[in-house]
Image (tube, rainbow, N blue to C red; front, side, top):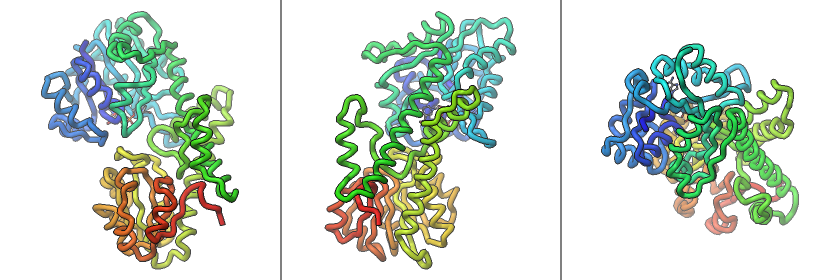
Length: 437
Ligand code: NAD
């Protein structure tokens, strides 16, 4: 099986690398030449644990290639994956399908008879059918199939998630598409991964429903954390643990925090809500989740500002910028509104993140970027923990306190036990564990 993957982002690159690890011949294509140049030198343009080693080993084994030109690899391919971005439209909540359709237009002239086009992107129901019709229009005589294969991996554990997924979803419209897609995922089937077969639109819908449900769970527990802050003695960590023990609920996505961010939940919930309004089945729970999360992020930023008091002459150290640990992705990270509100109010911001500083520095040239948490804390009137990086769990608290002007820690991820920072002389504020004033 010869495979081409269009788009070398978090999903496309991980998919390509993992399929080459299965033994397939894979070429990854991107229209940003700098990314291809890096990849040809075995350097990953994104951070994902373990990815660079796998790029190197599979490239050296001759199974993984990188190219900037679809004309060079699509004609030979039995399978072409589309893994380009599907961001929110600049004009509103809807999904922007420009990149998908432009990639379709790029590949269509080069597709060969029998090729299966697999859509990995998260797209609103009906998109794969439109992709099929678009190719039919461009290549009326071509015999091809389209498969919807939404991806469920999480940044930070993407390789593990791809290699050991909870399920693989295949939306199909013909037998060839099904057979080829099932052959691709045979290594996973052999390890008992459920392969769910659906229609094209059923597969598309399942991805949105899944992300919206998880986002709703996060917003729910954030709301309960607010409630805990109003009730003496109640503690969100205990409450999450107790409700998570119920099999019907499950313990995942029940950690209270500063709101969900990243490249998926915010834009996917918006896209689903907009799609649902458009087709006349508005999703009130999803709409509320979106609003609740926006409010949450604003409230957390305000909480930080209010906690430091008069902002004049103050310095705050923001620890963690990426939307979650083990990724350099800062898209819609809840750390961004915190940094922005502090800067708007004249607070000097010093910051540290193990992987995300390069992209964040482009956005915030006024922030002082430090090489470790202790350097970030120098002269600070508060440290704010925004991401659950392990390095922030393992902080040397005395060393941190000694660097600071005022030993105040605002832990918006609840990564420390309350007693620890207090024992080391900090005033410690967290989420859903302290009575709100
Ligand atoms: P990304 O923005 O990281 O990567 C997209 C890549 O496609 C970029 O490198 C871009 O240069 C390239 N590209 C765009 N148009 C192209 C074209 N015509 N030809 C060649 N390359 C092109 O996006 P991502 O995060 O990998 O997401 C891809 C899709 O997967 C989206 O639909 C997203 O919603 C979905 N998804 C993402 C995640 C995640 O955690 N990031 C998880 C599941 C699903």
